[in-house]
Image (cartoon, rainbow over all chains, first blue to last red):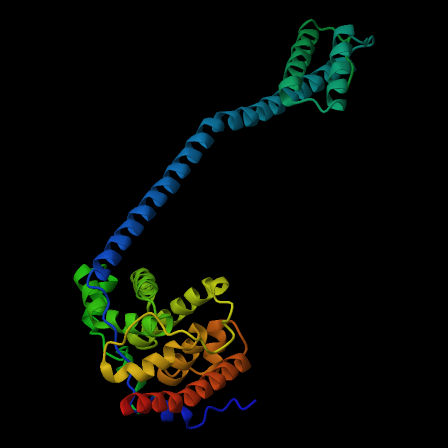
Length: 153
Length: 197
């Protein structure tokens, strides 16, 4: 196929000027109205986006205390474990001076429950009371000068 | 250069220079500057869309779409090309988008010839023949003829605009021009016959 238009365009077009067309005078006002609507629509959309952002921030703000409680729980459990470890060192020091170290059934039960809780992937909220109980029980044992009832976990 | 020997943009009005001050104010959202841009180029946009689509309502939709885009993108217009050329490209693309969206209504789109004449009447009497002939082409064929022959777009550019190959554009143009060429003598003969009676 011959795709070269050659001189034909000039042949049909020379002297046959195509008409110019005048748009409806109301067209530009219509475009301005459409533009105004477009701008307003975008503002609402932006406002909606902003509202959604604020709502999301508000939601995260309300959820923040829960996050903090998780962090607090972790911190509290770490403190209890540290406390328990310190008490245990105190107990070991006192036990070195004793000749009759015996297992305290209450501590034995607490340690058993702790081990079970860890095996069950327990949450901090379940572990904290057990660690707190262990520290209290350990403190009581030390305070009593008793070395009868200690187990190590 | 257009087929009529005149610079293409003068023929369609897109080559008018836009005052940088107007452009600057338009970028800042000055409505009077927007008015000035429309007054300068609105007619050129409408004429190009009208010549291709042949329907005033569709051409007005194109102009509206183009100017909404222009107002949106003015801030990003870097001035690498003349404003009129940028606007002309936008108009051509928007017009071709209309042709694409109306594809299902044009089962004969790949043919170059329509039997019926277009809906619009020419604005200038001396343009009747050219306009009548063009309006007998399918919109796609008309678009290729006008954009290539009068607006100076290359086949590569047309291929990109239509999402087709260059050979598609070349083939459609060649067939369209041949049809136009073939039709002229027939019309002339018809006029001569009428004058004899």
